[in-house]
Image (cartoon, rainbow, N blue to C red):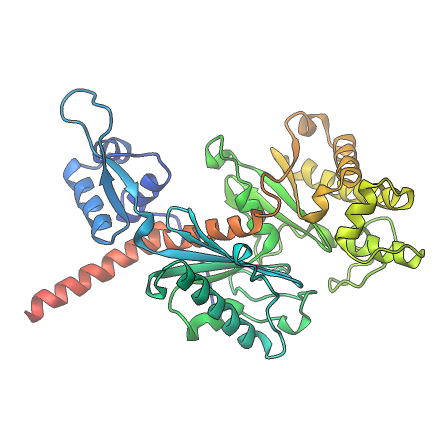
Length: 413
């Protein structure tokens, strides 16, 4: 089944959906500004805005400063018109966040101490049923009606084929290979449920909020038990032809694999330099380290063997990222995930990146930590879900359906 997204379709300039895009982006805050921005007649803008008001997506509040004449009322997205969910699935946790349509957090499963991993004994359908039950429970706890659920985005630590939405060779749960997890929600809801690589969601969350979106060009890297990457090009998530863009972890590097990887590439970065690989190498040398938390603690305490492993891994990661930076010339390389809290690892990544990058690339490159390393994945999920639910072409389709329904009602009266 083709799961190409509404948000990937270019909007029709001046359509109802395009007007919502302008309001949502803060580019047009009143009917008069919309008329100037779009070049549409004020009467046409009025009809577009009225359609959005009828859908419950926009309301008018207060008034803008006067430029002479009557003060225009300010147009705002009505965040109360529904809610979306974002879920971050991992091998050892499941975090869910509910948000209104303006992106404001309404509930977080971390606050309810309910972030246990999904059960997998009943297969993907059983896991989806449990995830949907958790959506419903969390919504009920904060007084939300399931009827107002508009959509969701689910992040998984695995490549996602595009546009089919199928999970590809997930190391965290091999039995989910080739499963279109989002489609399994059809027995629970008609709303869109998107499944995306977790590093791609981090990239979405890290898009620049200080300059026009189209100028945001970055590479986001998730450093944890495994390694993942996501790319923002021209302000938009770049998936590549089949969804594999950003898979930095499966580049062959100097070193020897110490953990298995499903990619089949000899000595790939993930199997040599991820936290899982570092832990395996230290354990083989007789060190008492079992988790990423152990690794971070020992590194912070200055354990010589651990710090050396972290520096070696960081140099390998930095070398791979330098090749990507020289090719793509991004504004930012963003480091996220649990291991981005390791100073020796991050210092080695930065040093190797700047050492190996062309001066023209390095001069404009900012290598930084995630603005919200713990929350970036679920925040990116909210962004993806809202971008789909409020996509201009989807809104235009909703308006057409509403118009057809009204016409049939009139004819039958």
